[in-house]
Image 1 (cartoon, one colour):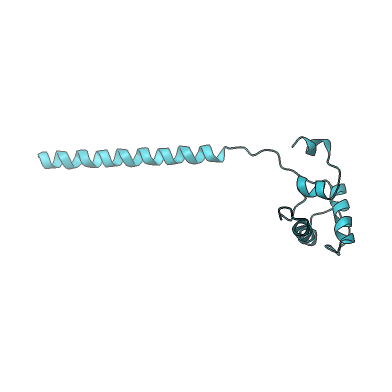
Image 2 (cartoon, rainbow, N blue to C red; image 1 turned 45 degrees about the vertical axis):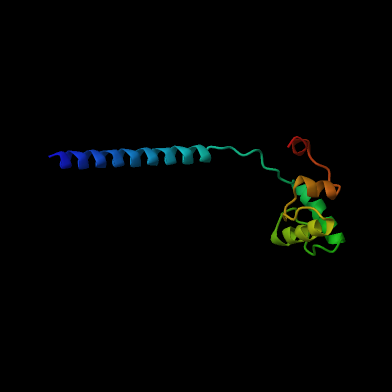
Length: 111
């Protein structure tokens, strides 16, 4: 009888520990998902047009000035960023716009 009671208590303790561990993992995951990111820096259509013109004049881009960050523009940006010694991202971030002497919007200046 003592063996049955001991085994039952052992299983009860293991089950309780497993449930507690599962709850801890679940609450940690949901806390991580709720973390908010700051605002996303986005270039305007006019800034993209200006960047495409500059990239074209420097030989990094051969497409049309359409004001959209298409694959060819991103590739041109990567080449420009590498040539200028700035972090290569293929995006029109603040550092790249400033290096190109393209004016930032008031909203972008606060980011």
